[in-house]
Image 1 (tube, rainbow, N blue to C red):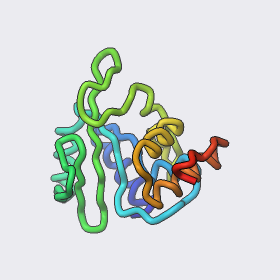
Image 2 (cartoon, rainbow, N blue to C red; image 1 turned 45 degrees about the horizontal axis):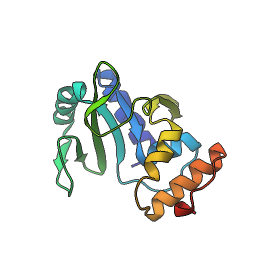
Image 3 (cartoon, one colour; image 1 turned 30 degrees about the vertical axis):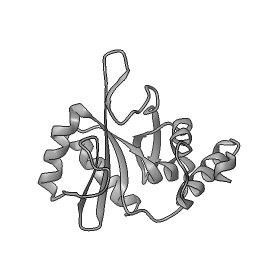
Length: 161
């Protein structure tokens, strides 16, 4: 997938009343304002309240569920041709506590980035670094963390050097 695919998906979601936040590798690239690597999918976060609309949006556009290990109602992959969306569902209560789904802490979805001329909501940079360093890294995670640290002037954790 490329930037224009991601922008098109976000524009269409927005047009259909679905708020989504950019996450994962495309988020890192948007935060550091440069491409880093190829992407098989785009990661998005959506609120549980938008899940029924999202499922309808997928059906109307031919996006079908893709089986994979670890699939759940809160973390699933949909695809159409070469376009894949890795969906992370979360839910906050009235006090801002994450009460179900992917555990995005309050404040972690406060970032915004320009991607392909569009302003997109995203994971905040400091939280993207925390998320990317919370598990044993693959090569792509090291690359993402090094780019984030270089761009924002942070120290690269030894696990990602």
